[in-house]
Image 1 (spheres, rainbow, N blue to C red):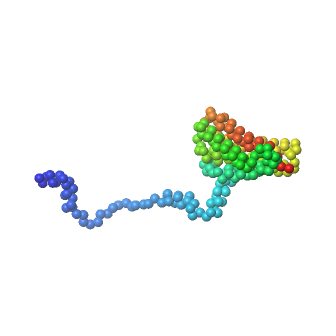
Image 2: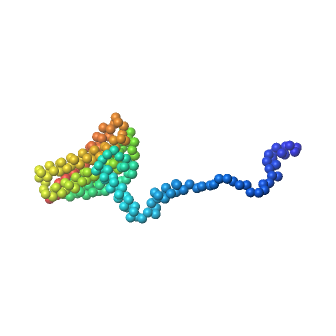
Length: 228
């Protein structure tokens, strides 16, 4: 009977054991502080609004520089944003206003139409890139396509200045050269950033829609004529 009680209480004997004195425990306990320092370094919760705006403007400016000097870089893909494309799209749409086609109701590009053409075209090209096996994200592709509109936006500003002196043959020739160069620059810059993200045997299927996209924008710029 006593053996059965001992079996039912396997640790019963430990109740008679008492520990007297202090037991020293070697070693120390440390709390990792590297992660908290890293979080504090990249945290912008306590950053002044002015610093945040200036930092974003510097980032947008750096992306403009990458478009002006296109090379196989991951800057536009790594730190993507849509502030630059939005600014370029609005600027281009505003510069295309006030044309002769607008005043004659001949279907000239209105602000909303330009806005829809640019963004809808960018979305179609991005979906085409993803369906063909592209390795970049949806918004990264939109960022690249939007920033690469910058040469065409500059061309539109130059064409508006040229048109101040008239719309003769010389004016058209100058605008043709400017728009053609800007079209080629936009296409080259976008393919330089997007080329490595596509399978080697499908790059032509990705470049062709990009070519058409910038060609349509360039055509709108070239055929623009101010209202009298």
